Image (tube, rainbow, N blue to C red):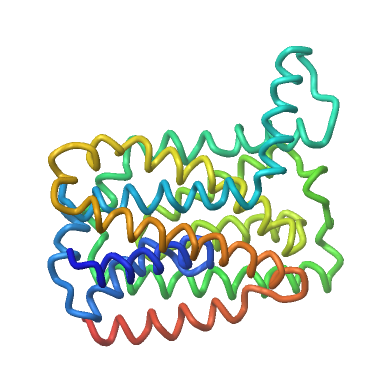
Length: 284
């Protein structure tokens, strides 16, 4: 892997992990469009230096999210500690902490069992293009359904502090879809949150907080790959790529939280439909 490739993939990971356009799908499609065949083979291999490289990017992205939400996480961790000691939930922050834990369980269990199989099966350009197009339909369809529910007065608008436990589990469970290359973690969780009554800003915030432990755990779980023989010869590239991913992720979450104060998922839906459709034509 060259340093140019490390920089491109690092920036790509940092942006697309948080933008609702699928980091996994873009890590397949962009190298395919650029003719980086060795990276594509690494994506679908059981073990490869490229997958060890991706470990570093995941850890860097999670660290960037922790840094951005450092005050939130400090309050959540402190609140959880008090909740455990007193064996009750007294504050909205404590409740949010438990919601995040409960919502993380479905994708955590499913990912441990099926992540490897799904990655090796679907980390191919045509499959990623199809799923990216489906992701565009999910984003656009979610916005349409939300408008329809709101116009018919069928949508109960909720704040994040009042999100029911069942809805949190549903939002967390929707993360399972992101194991398919082309389906966005942030996109599918945001759509689920919107349809359960959250506004765009709260849906985005919950999505990013929910993604943090999942991304970090996925990186730390495979950290031995990076520290072992698979990491030999690429650790400088990992360092450069991870730095790019961290900077891009921090900038992305800052931009998106401002974006969703007044805007919707529709532009991202259009992008996924266009890029996914062109990729289907190109790789069919």
